[in-house]
Length: 402
Image 1: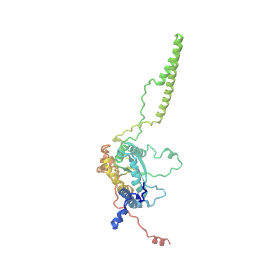
Image 2: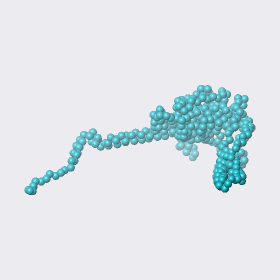
Image 3: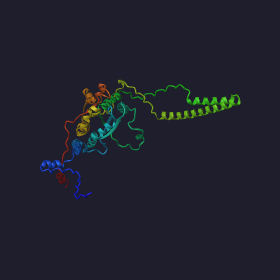
Image 4: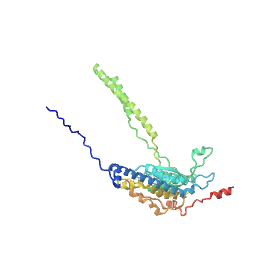
């Protein structure tokens, strides 16, 4: 076998040919761009980030414009014995949603304006329907009783205190949304028509005594004990009867213990359960108004978007919250400057544009109050002339001082 001296060909891997180097400007730029997936990712991140930054910048600018308009109120001088102006804010949960939405709306768009205007506030929440109405009615009735001399304006703790501290007295009511507005006005109506005399406590009807589990268990024990003494059977029957009676006695003892525990738990539940409120008589013959009058009402629109159909509106509102700053800020400014007008019949339709947003969860909100109650209510309006802060030249002030 002859040895071949021919050289064997070398095996080389299949290496892909390198693409040609681009020579044009567009080709060079295309070679530097990332892949299609990375382009989509960075475009989405950049767009969302840009919208968030834009909204933040415009929101801060809108808050500054509103704060500058009410800043003059915070710079007004206040006497030593004077307290800052105070309002009471009533909020409630929007239909089909939680009260956290209203809390966020107040904290983000209403509270900054009150802080800039140096207006104190107290927030009261209505967690169930009718709670705000009951609170307002109780407050109006209390002030009527104080004016009639049937109740002291000070609490027991303040009466016993050596020195009564100064405290701000609310001189206005602010509501967020039409539902809260309706409950406040209905509370005014009820508070002006309720009797000033406390109702007599309702007599509790006698309860029919029933045989309790404890009594049944005690009767079982008695029967078991008596049967042991009167049984006159043979020896085997006596053993069987004794074991049966022992089982019955044990079961009866368990029933007694369970009944005692249930009775104890029942007593605790009765102690924890608050007594039902006694209804106060209400009639037009009891009508009167507190000596200080009814507090003016300030309405702040609150439109809560719920449901899939409003999804596109939610996305738009997410990146345009600065609109809410100006929208709500204009209404809060009415309360801050405290300019009012008579509450007319047409004003009972305020907030009707909110009803289509919650018509899935409840019907339209109607406000039914007497005309003579409505005539006692004032409504905050936009002031005609907003005063401007006078800018004093610092050099002139320095020269006058020296």
